[in-house]
Length: 327
Ligand SMILES: NC(=O)c1ccc[n+]([C@@H]2O[C@H](COP(=O)([O-])OP(=O)(O)OC[C@H]3O[C@@H](n4cnc5c(N)ncnc54)[C@H](OP(=O)(O)O)[C@@H]3O)[C@@H](O)[C@H]2O)c1
Image (cartoon, rainbow, N blue to C red; front, side):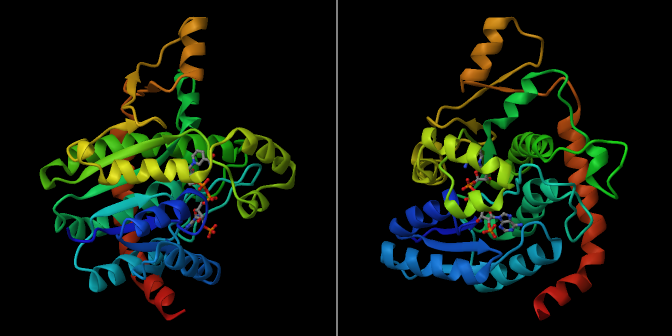
């Protein structure tokens, strides 16, 4: 069997790191797509030793920057013959953080969690088409349960331009919206890429123990909460195994446009409506359904927004890309 070529974004810590190790142990060719090269190099060395597989490469990627994504995809396409598995694992979420923009002037949560992955996938499509069994996986979150509330909506106005000082900003809300947006794009991409045999799925992550380094990155007041959550969360290797199964197992070879829960069951859409108390409780505690959001046109709106944003930034970012490569 040919070695699979696998890209994992944010592969230097947590679930991404464990996934890189899992694929490397299986003998695959892993490309760790990370932005912090000094730290990531140490992690890469550790994975190579632990997996006894020296085909674990490290390529620089800041998934919030269009220039960096273009540079990464250009390098990848010239160095590797094809792409079999693309795992969009990296994400931005910093509790209590103020409104921040990406280098392209887009709200940072959406830039990192939605538009970056979308652009990266678009630029790697030709490489994916060369694979016999191409699979894309998006790391989702159970935070989208907030969308069971019909009042919960997307605030697409906040995504570009300056922060509107009249609007209160919550990075928690933005993270929730970004993960719902990524889920909806999963379904849309699965349809769009079906003719090319590219499978696109998402995994709803309901918690994985955070490393000390990750906890240090959040605001100090949130750290004790994260430590308490950690007591109940499973180790990141559990979700990494789920990444591995969805992206390699024969029984998912033809599965596309699905959202998996942590038990690898396919979740079902549930219409957004005001449910009775018991149904609400079941939705919140269970993991068999997700909020469908199909009572609005948001899936198409998001798709068009992604296309528009990327088209408008592709022209301007050619110079930025040169600057990025010269760094
Ligand atoms: N852990 C949980 O309880 C939980 C729950 C629900 C969903 N999830 C999802 O699971 C995925 C993995 O989470 P985790 O807990 O393993 O997190 P983690 O340990 O904090 O890892 C996040 C990774 O993303 C990378 N990253 C962030 N911004 C980036 C950027 N702009 N460019 C490149 N890399 C970037 C980080 O790199 P740096 O080292 O450079 O920061 C890090 O490697 C995420 O998508 C997260 O939303 C996790």
